[in-house]
Length: 89
Image 1 (cartoon, rainbow, N blue to C red):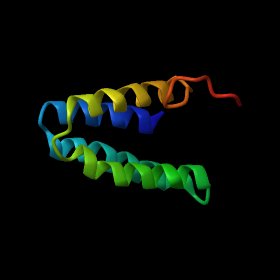
Image 2: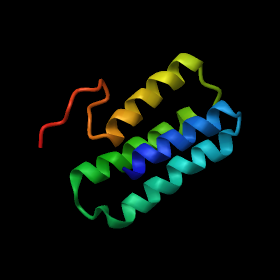
Image 3: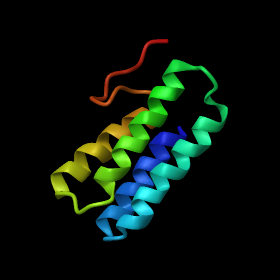
């Protein structure tokens, strides 16, 4: 949930041209998750993804890319895959 919210915040900042804070939103969330991830491989992978994505959000992004990333993060926040399918648990 934290990662999805951070991605949405980063997209908002990116669209506004606030690239420094877009990157900061993802980096801060990565640090937060790293703090409780321990040895959990899924959480550690999420931290790595956020850190890698922070460079993407820290630069101008085409509107189509922002829309795709927003759709994916919104779905993840609703426990769906990036493509919108329900996640079976």
